[in-house]
Structure formats: structure tokens, C-alpha cells
Image (tube, rainbow, N blue to C red; front, side, top):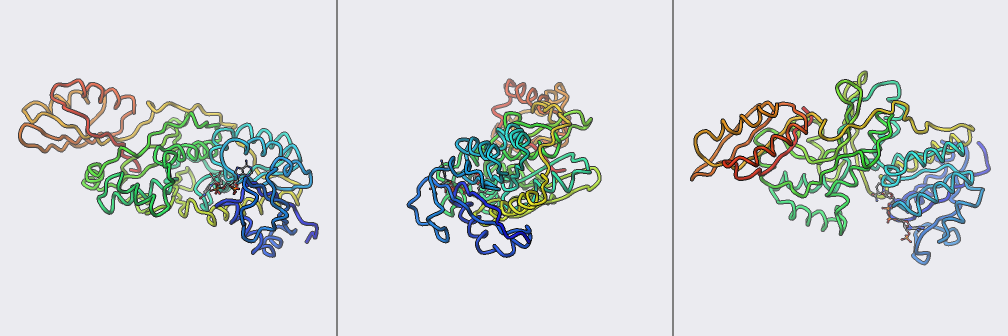
Length: 429
Ligand SMILES: NC(=O)c1ccc[n+]([C@@H]2O[C@H](COP(=O)([O-])OP(=O)(O)OC[C@H]3O[C@@H](n4cnc5c(N)ncnc54)[C@H](OP(=O)(O)O)[C@@H]3O)[C@@H](O)[C@H]2O)c1
């Protein structure tokens, strides 16, 4: 074993960074044996230097992250600051000064992954980010490496623990959205401002990263269709139950049936209780992958938290250190397929639509005609009502989102349709 240590600069020492530092210290002998050289924490950049940080030598702490990455003797920079700047500039500066980079930063990778990979390539360094998607769950490496000989057709995932906790609570207790969100906040599963989670921004960043890797195509954050889950109601869950389904906020990355394009989207959807993702409870994450040769694979585990996320960071750190010692590099960006990313209107799926209608003869026929005129074939219809008002639940066969959108627009114009109570896609069948 080499005795000269590999030097690691830790940028950020918060929820994730403090656990990275702790595991580096407590597992140092094992890490050295696995890498073939000791790893040394050479510096820790933070915003508030006076904060007490258990297990961290105060002499290593600095507020000058730029000087740390410019030192020139750093082998690996671990970026766990988060956000776009200064993380982006620090990572590119690290490459320019000879370091490889491990990051947990989904927002940055989803937005600027291509430019960061280019910077890594230009400097012949590694860029790893297993922790950026679904915390501890090995997902980037299996997609990038283990499935590199297969053809992935679909990635369907619960990649945000906060929203899964809320939807699971609504499902099991019958609570409304706000009540379930309040519980998630009280238990520390939701942040004071939950927008990034409940509006699907966090999941959309992860969908962009997963789609890019799965389909060897650049997928930008803007390419991902995003809908949040704040409009999901207790009534939606009741309808889902009647269909033998539950509701999850899903990140869905798909290759079109003809293979010529891909789509990426995040929205709440009904999935059958028999689907493996339906059983993912609480704040857990899971990602279901369908590929030509392997068939169906499921990756499941804690999608966030200091120690679980640090596990993924440390796995990357070991891999990058091994590459450095061996004089090679791990896989970089693979975007050779360059498939076009189709708009949401091209997505084909099933729909569950709840309508409030007038309870009089001929309404059902009128509604059915509108579906037929837009080429959306109806699978089942359920009608219930009294005192002149009725509710109509229509479940369709597979149709394009554009066709469904046209159908709903036309339905809203019918005098007999009082309102469209909810539209929910049905996935995982
Ligand atoms: N938390 C999770 O469960 C989780 C899961 C997956 C991925 N991630 C990703 O991991 C990254 C870190 O998340 P986190 O939860 O650990 O965040 P955090 O607890 O807020 O920690 C951020 C750290 O960065 C430091 N920092 C902020 N601005 C800085 C600057 N300009 N220069 C130097 N240091 C700076 C902070 O310093 P102070 O300590 O002085 O404030 C803090 O130590 C993010 O990209 C996040 O998306 C987190």
C-alpha cells in the first residue's frame, strides 16, 4: 500500500459533509485498505468558521473555499455545499488545479452537468455524483456502468422522500394535503419552505440526471415536464383506492416506442397496488428500471439524510481515489445517442378523469362523444349522483397527453359539464 495519503478537500460540512468527515475518520483504515492508500482530510470549507464541529480539527476549517481548491496538492474535492454558485465555480477551479470531484449537488448537475463534464474532460479528471439522486441508493453507477451493455427503456422512480411521506400519510390516514404536510414538517421530513419538494423541482432535477444517463442523451432540467402534488386531494385517494391504486409523485423517463426520442416528466400519478413502487412507504425512495435484457430492476432505500447520503459520497470517493492511484479515469458523460427530447404532448399513458356533470339523460353520451372525437378511447365509466348533480369518473385507454388535453378543453365547454374535478395519469401497468 502507498503510504503517501491522497488529500481530500471537503467543501461544506453540514448535514452531509459532517457525516462524510465522520466516516472518513472512523473508517480510515478500511478506506485505506480498499483504496490502496490512506486518505487525509486536508481542509474543510464552511460559511461559519466558529461553529463547533465534532470530530473536525479546527485547524482544517476555512471560509476560503477558493484557496482550498487552488492549493494544487488536493487529489479529490468533495462538494457538499449545494446550490449553483459558488459550487459551480469551485468545481471547475478544482479541475483546473488538478483535483477530481465528487458532488451531491443535483441542482447543479441537472443544470450544468454537460459543462462540468466538459471541464472534467478538459483536465482529464473524474466527476462523480452518486449522491445527487436518491441519496444512499446506488443508481448512477448501476445505470452508468452495470447496465452499460443493456438498453434501458424506462426509469420510473419515487425520488423525493418528503413528497412520498406526505402522499403515504394521505393514503394511510385519509388526511388532506395540508394536514399531511404539517405532519411532515413537524417530524422534520419537510423543510420550512417545502416548494422545491412539493412542486416537483427536486424530483425534476433528478429526472433530468437519470434520463441523461439512462438514454445516453443530454436531458436538461428545462426538458423535464413538471407538475407538483399540492392539488392531490383525499378524494383522489378515494378514487385511486376504488381502482386498486395509490398515488405517488413519480419521475418518469421513457424511450418512445419507436426508440427515436425520449421524454422526462414529474407529476403525481395513480399506480396499481400490485406495482413494486406502490409499497414504498414513508420517506423512502425507489427507482424501477426496465431494460431490454435485464428486464425489470428495482433500487430501494433511504433517499436522503446525512449518513445515507454520505455513504454514496464515500463510495464515489473510493472509486475516484482508486482511479487516481491507477492513473485512469472513470466513465465520463455518455451523450452519444443525442436523442431528441419530446414534449409532454407526445407522452402516451392512461388517464383517470373526474367530472361534475348535470344528472340528466344524454350527458354520458355527450361526454363519450367528446372523448371519441379526440381519439381518446374510454376503458371504464362510473356514474353516481342525485338531486340533479352527478359525478362521472372516466378511465381511458392509452392516449397522448395532447389528445387528452384537447378532450378536457372540449369537455369544459359542454353546458352539462359543471367542472373537471381532477385529472390523474395512471402509470405502471
Ligand atoms: N441533506 C440530504 O439529505 C441530502 C441528500 C442528497 C443530496 N444532498 C445534497 O448535498 C448537498 C449538501 O446538502 P446538506 O443538506 O448537507 O446542506 P447543509 O446542511 O445546508 O450544508 C451546507 C454546507 O455548506 C457550507 N457552505 C454554504 N455556503 C458556503 C460557501 N459559500 N463556502 C463554503 N461553505 C459553504 C455550510 O457552511 P456552514 O456549516 O458554516 O453553514 C454547510 O456546512 C446539497 O447539494 C444537497 O442537495 C443532500
